[in-house]
Image (cartoon, rainbow, N blue to C red):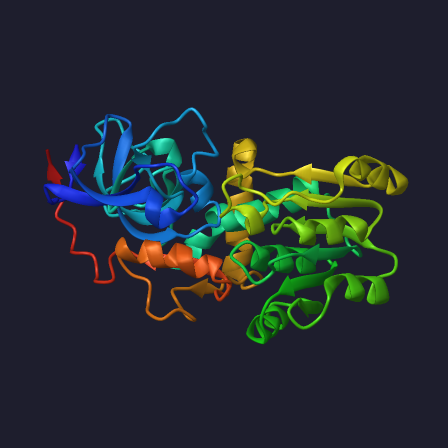
Length: 357
């Protein structure tokens, strides 16, 4: 393979016991350096993204048959430092982004099809992978969002919420966004949100009843529990609620907060010809390419902005594999704004010294 001079070992975070408590579930381990196979590339990770679902992965909820140990993390960006003998489409020194289990690692071996080229290694591209594509594809494929509709985005100042707000505005919709601080209210205004609602200061159900009596056409719902109930009750005739997640329950043993609807959800939806649909990004893999192309074009034109948070409201900057533990805590503290990312290698990458191994 063609490669750079590499260390003999590298570090990675491994899930060693199943738990929604990331610090209890995950350990840092040292492993021998790996070599890519004929159709694989070796990537030195520069940035990794923090997602609410990182603790679903550490709990084993995505694949109940998988037993520890297995790699933690879901997405990263880095530089190719080695390529297999059959790889012709990528080169050493090229930047790539990727979505794969086990992304919290200083180096990763990836099949070529998982390594998506990027023009340069900037954290903003990281935000497009899970956060950006989730917003884009769910609103298009499930929400069937149309110009002139009223769209509510919960946790709107988060990593994926910020994109849902902007994409809904670009589609010509009126956008309501929930958040928890006045700073986030100002952030939401800066990205075009028509009606930010700080739920620590205003009761969302009151706002919706008084200001939006006709109801909500589309809801981008990531919180669950009481928030989910409020949103269902506020759906308009033929309204669509997209279940992106239920972060309010991820830290519990069962992974969600039960709702109070019981057997009444079906008749409530029937009365309005409304729908509640789930969305899991992995089920739309055939549309990744077109979604990333759309998002990349919007970002390049300046129409779509990615707010990146490297510990803005945390006690320290988030760096290195050690910073990932703080990053997960930071996300659940509700203090972050935008996409949380970790810089695994703050110092500049060394100049390329390709070699045949």
